[in-house]
Amino acid sequence: MNRLARLFDVLQAAFDSPKHRRVLSWGLVSAFVGALGVIELARLGWLGERWSAALPRNHFHAIELAFYLLLAYEVTSLTFAIARSVSTAAGKQFEIFSLILLRRSFEAFAELDEPIRWPQAAEAVWHMVSDAVGGLLLFVGLGFYTALQRHRPLSDDANDRERFIAAKKVIALLLIGTLAVLAVRSGWGVVTQLHPTSFFEAFYTVLIFADVLVVLISIRYSTSYHAVFRNSGLAVATVLLRLALSSPPPWTSLLGVAGIVFAIGLTAAYERFLPVLVRAERREG
Image (cartoon, rainbow, N blue to C red; front, side, top):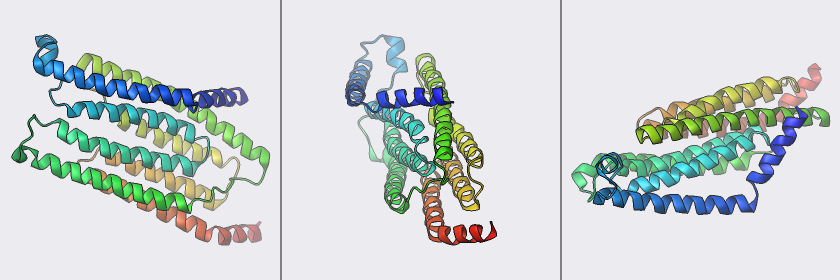
């Protein structure tokens, strides 16, 4: 497990390097500009009958693609956050979901023909407002959630803490492998069907199992009721986000906001009553 943990450290150092961020930025810009060019060529009919008919004609699809790639990067960063702390990883999940809502705002307009006419755009505007407001509320909620964090160690034993972190790094490596498989499957769907598969829905489903696995492993190092309850509760928030991804507007935003409100309430209660619960456990022990 120590070897796998060291492999994780190497991958994280490469992922967080300034060079990697520069490559990411240029890659996103190139993908966005390239998509705009391809869509325009398809509109002009210069790509042949088959491709011109299959490719989208709305330039908003280029924005959707750029956000899709940006979200793929954020999902990758989430796998590295899992090794830091359970609360940090949960916050990262809400960050990604807020960006998903913004992407869906553009996605609603991408389904419209250009030039845009109001009777046709009315429903898309409603979906866009719903998703955008949901993303804003998640952003505000994340501010409260982050302010409440104290990042208390799971155990007072330094060796136990190191072993728990190493175990989470192994789980993160498994998630990175799963992410690669889902990315290849989604890419294959784009090539063969010109439409990506449900990448984020599948990944959030995997996250539920990963969160539960972290909860079960944490019991090896601490059986404290308050720690188990907090970690299990954050896994419930992941379930709400997964349900939100499969829901139509406005339920997507409502379930996402419900998830962050639950996480805020859980964290506030945990920090408020933790000293009381710790004293009670010490008396009983």
